[in-house]
Image 1 (cartoon, rainbow, N blue to C red):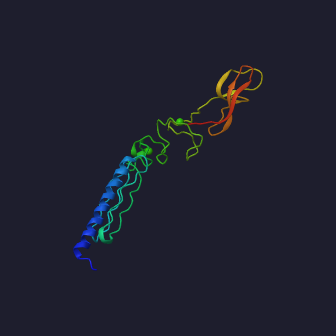
Image 2: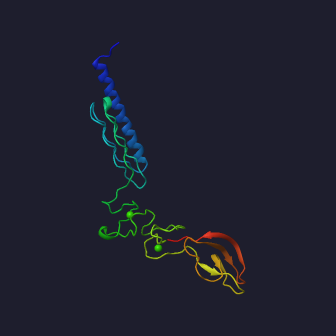
Image 3: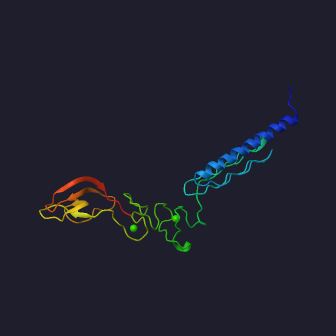
Length: 196
Ligand SMILES: [Ca+2]
Ligand SMILES: [Ca+2]
């Protein structure tokens, strides 16, 4: 049996509608997950589907896929995850603008964990080898180091315990715990110095 041109056209149009609905579903899902941009509009009978939109938001958001063109049109591209880069001045999407021409104070606009005001602590160094994650020009250590050897010590709690007061450096593991005035360590554990 042979289908009439009208039936074929109806099938083609219905297929296109389904793709557009799929498109809307993709946009909704992306909007929940960080704000994906609008996907491209499906193409017509002979045109390829539109490209997916660029994802926006702090987490990689997926733009809606372009609708497949009816009667063989190619599907659109999936949107690329990303964020609003502020015209190229916040490439790591951490909300802080890069230093220099951008006029910002992000001392490393290629590392999203590095920005002024970062209050986290890190056991591994930045890409440049430093531990200055909060861009204040210094490396703050989470814990101090206390001498806990010999016969006379200063009582201390929650410190690195050492033979002298030389700080346990950032990223270095040492003995952590308490020390009595008689230089007796207690509640000890092995801990890695965290910095920012
Ligand atoms: Ca930035
Ligand atoms: Ca710092």
